[in-house]
Image (cartoon, rainbow, N blue to C red; front, side, top):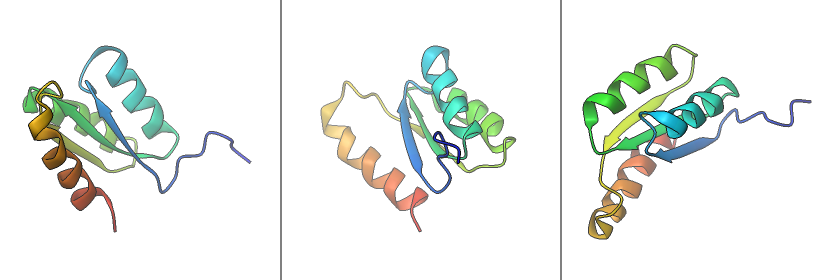
Length: 85
C-alpha cells in the first residue's frame, strides 16, 4: 500500500507555477493527484500544467491573485467545476 497515493484526489496549489509551489504540484502529480495550478500569470500555469499532464494526470491552470479576496470564490468554483466529476 502506497501511503502517499493521491489517485482520485484533486490538489489546488496556489503559487503552483514556480519554486516550491511547482515542486509540490509535481510531487502530488507523481503520486496520482490531479492538480489545479493557480498563479497570477496564466502562461506560467499553462507551462506547469503541461509538465503535470506529461505525468499522466489532469492539470487545470488558472490565473488568480490570492491576495484579492473577492476573486477567491470564483477560483474555488472554477477548480471545482473543472476538476470534479
